[in-house]
Image (cartoon, helix red, strand yellow):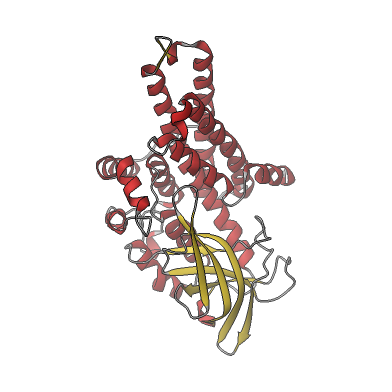
Length: 376
């Protein structure tokens, strides 16, 4: 499969490529990651000015109407350049949930700040023992008048140290593993009794463990209907997987081109590595893995754009196949570069780490292979 982009989509892609080529080189990215915040507000503002933060949202929400294909284009280019700014967390996860599950008043209140780049959001759903199960929620939310009081903890919340607001899942009714009874709440990161323990992830980003000790939030800050948060999170997962697969494809394409170029210039025993047939076979396998991943990723994004009913099954299939392929390409790229492959000075190791992180977000390849089989 090969999507033929429209003129507007080509302009979007070319504008991102030009900006990243001129202002987001690997050395610049290393400097950004080394800062205290770990991302660049200057570049984030530039992304918003380019229209990237508004691109996926519907025109009725004030966006540019690009949908999942716009997200695909942005995330693929971000994957090529290892962009660390919180586009995925703010626009894809939080923004997508607000647009799909929020009330008209909530969309009007929250989305403009996301689209103009003035607000950073993230999603806190995982818990210590939940693995990838949205309805395994121990965090509780009890009603007290016109407020809810949240108690519990959330694990490995990517982007939480950066965020202005968080969308948090909590159980308003039922037992810890019931599908019904999970609700979503919008919290200010600086809410009283909300504590963050921040840490750096293997791919250079920032995350945090959240502890909620009777955090009070207005009932009007509930996102979507009470007790129906799992369905909203499952739809969010499909969109998230499509975006992550696009990012992985972007990273894989850079690893392939970097490895091919290296094999042409690096010599062993006076001969370029690329002339050894066994290494040529490996690089052909890497190329095939990439092309298969591109096809699956595009198919998934087209299905989501058309709102086809089999999107969830297709998302699991793509997450599994692309995940295994990306890991294979990353491992081969590191091995073909030798000891340099994992050095901090070379970008190959950074792509490897990012792919490793992508593979465990919203379910690893093995989990989604099993989930795909269960839906067959």
